[in-house]
Each structure stands twice: as C-alpha cells, then as structure tokens.
Image 1: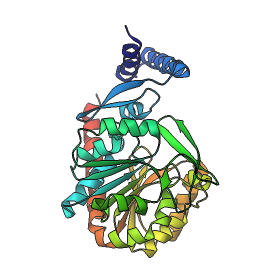
Image 2: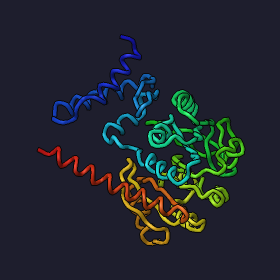
Image 3: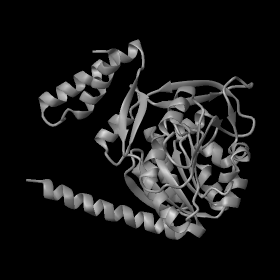
Length: 322
C-alpha cells in the first residue's frame, strides 16, 4: 500500500470509527495519536467530502474532525447567505481568509451567488484554487488583508489556520487592504455579504473599511477574538461602537463551532461589555453576524430559523432516546 493510501486510510478510519463505548474511544484516540506521529514526518494531502464536493486538504487540518463531531459546523454562514439572497437576488459575497475553500463550498449548498475568495497562505491558496475550480462564479486572489501600512513579519501555520504577525517593513508576503483588492475585482464593489475569518485581523479590517461599509452596508460575518486582536495591535470591543455609528443595529452571536447563542442590539452596551468580558476571560472567540438597520428583517428571519432548527433537532433527539 502506498504512503498516500495509508494517509487516506488513517483519516478515514479516524473519522468513521464509532466513539460510543470504551473500546471504540480507545481506538479513536490511538488513531489520532498515530496521525499526530505521522505529522512529525510530513503533512500530506488527503481527500475529504464536503457536501457535494471532494476537497483536498492537509492531514493536519482539523476541519474533518470538527465536521465529525458537529455535522452542522459552519452551516450558519450558509443560512445567512440563503436569507440574504432572498432579499438581494444579485447578492455578491467576499470571503476574507478563505483557507482551503470550505466556507464557499458550504455557502454554495445554500446559494450559488458569486464569491470572491482571498487567502494569503501559499499552500492554502493552492488548495483553494484546486478545491474551487468546479464551483461556479468564484474569483480568487492570493493575499492577506489588513489595514493601511500593515506589513507581514511572519506567518505561523498550524491546525489548518494561518496566524499573521505584523512586521516593521514590507516582506515578500502580500498584504493589502480590502478596498485595494476591490479595485482589482470591481464586480464585488457593492458586496452585500462580507465574511471575515482572519485570525485576529477581523476587527482591524472592519475599522479600516468604514468607507466601504458605509457605501455597501453588507451583512458582516466575522470572528470576534479579543486575544488575537490584541496580538495585531487592535482592541476588539470598539468594533461594536464603530458598527453602530455606521448604521448597524443588530448582531447575532454564534458559538465558535456554529451553534446559535443569542442576539443583541448594538445599543445594549452593558450586555456587549458582559459578552466581551466573558469571551476575553475564557481566551476564546465567537462568530458575530452584524446587520445594518436596513436589513433588520433578515436578522429576524435568521434568528427565527435558528429556533425552528433547534426545535427540530430536539424532536429528533427525543425520538432517538429508547
């Protein structure tokens, strides 16, 4: 058996083994341990089915294990895109931090609108290009996104994420502002759904793009990660005041693996402070979906859909209880 087939078997076996019962859990931990040892030698590419698509990704990538434990992982972005498309038939979307293209694949299972994918890490970008080649209406560009004057000092890649550290002078790795990218991709200048997953740069990008947000008023789907924001020199909490000043009124909050948590109005400052302090104290993060006041009805529909989905899941779980 070739090394490539062994690597694929290792992933498939770990994903398919049941985890109920002590013997199965022991086998699962053994397979995860073997995978960990394999990664000391190299990080080979393997295949993973994502919806209707077959994806290539590094063996080190945690996406397959997230999807195994949480089958609806990241489907919240797809749900938001569906309701946004219902209001905006000509919807366009930008995916900042597109990684290997998993988000756009999930979104395309809900809505087939045009998507601009931006990814700066070279290996992830090559896989993004390969994984999206058969997806309709997808444009890609290799670049990190930051604020004016940002320079990449280093890039730390682990567990399927690329963490950028800023440096004092320009390097060989590309980083630019979102507005600069849009000058090269005018089709997306009036973007109505902007997803940002940039390992701490999310709030920095939002603060730098107030002109774009004022003009297009896109639904914002971003990662709120106070600790990582501090690492790139950006306080996270002021992002809520910034959005409020631009006419955004409501946010939906999701746990980091995609489960709906709560909604807040951006004038509920004390509640936002409580949320921030809780997440910061835990050293964790959450997904935030921010809606301009003109799109308040979309926020209401997405929230209602989450409650319907929760009720259906609960009913299904109760039926499975002996």
